[in-house]
Image (cartoon, rainbow, N blue to C red; front, side, top):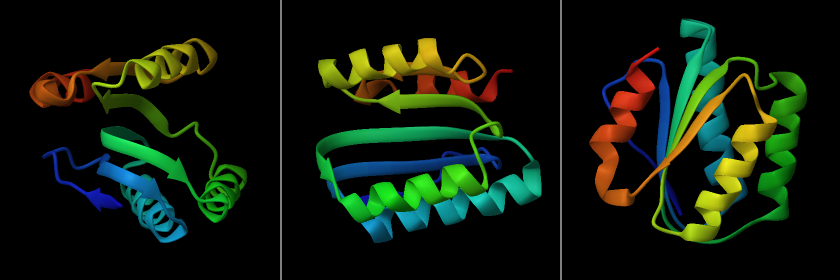
Length: 121
């Protein structure tokens, strides 16, 4: 399940994940991202991962369609809230590959620091 959340940053796409990510979940996030890119040009992302039980193949296909159509050049920062060590390792690896996007992990209880990270240029 995926739930959109408001973190008080107009150009943010923020959501909470618990369980499995479905195609409709992915569509919700990607639609929000497209709309905010049209209004603000660049966006920041906050992902609060409470539990992760996988992702549907159809959701991955939706993400690839988005990447082909929009790309990732409009994403400037990503903050991930997780207490899962393997997810933190994956985010750190992604941060080395995507040099134009600043990525950082925070513990789930440190949401305020994650929001401050996204606010500061």
